[in-house]
Amino acid sequence: MRWGLVLLWLAGCDGVFGLGHLNAPPIDAPIADGSVDSLDAYVCVPSTQHNEDGDSYKDDCDACPTVTSDTADDDADGLPNDCDPNLSKSIGGDKILLSSVFASSSELDANYTQGGSTNAAVSADELVLQTGANATTVMTMTPTKIVASVAVLTTVGGTPQPADKLTLGLNGGVCSVATSGCASEANRICITLGPNTTHVALATNIAQVTLWQDDAGQHCEVRMRSGGGPFVNTSTGTFTSSKAFARVESNAFARLSSIVFYGEK
Image (cartoon, rainbow, N blue to C red):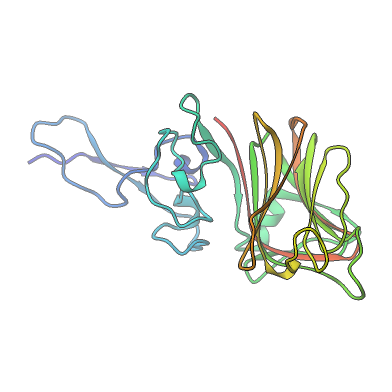
């Protein structure tokens, strides 16, 4: 009985970022008799013990770091179906450009620059966006999809106003979620969540905000923990290569547990 070699993927586990194969057994396994120079497993050595989605893989060894997923990968691009932004793409495929789970402030410092009237911060494994804060990626990218997991979105003091928004975006398109009235404008898609609005659901109940682009246009989606949804608005436009951002506007306050940027290989 011959055993293959074990290939140790160091340096952040290339498969997560589309540089190598990841959907393989996490432990060593025997290979058939007579095989020569075969690799029977790909073992990822995590640089962090943080596990955002609570599955069997640490974040930097997880092809879907914020989604508990199975291994089904219909388009064979290395991203399991549960977090693949485009399952129909069989040529080229998709990858994670940047996955931020905010396990430490060093993650924020390494991958984002600060802007706005207040600084963003990391606390209790969440990105804290105080009123006026803006976190912009260091990386220039053209994502196909941006997914932010929201722990809290609310207004600081007083009655929510139309300008109180959580916004994800980059050049060519943004998605804004407001705690009061929010009007769409050039390159901005708005969804309002609050009493007496089109979507009667409290902003404090938001679970996820997603901005993505496909052949049908740009889409802004909000998923709720309970109470209806998902809510989706669509517009036209085209993302252009730029630095992406998450920000709060006016008197909004948000805590984000993760932001994942997906793009084409």
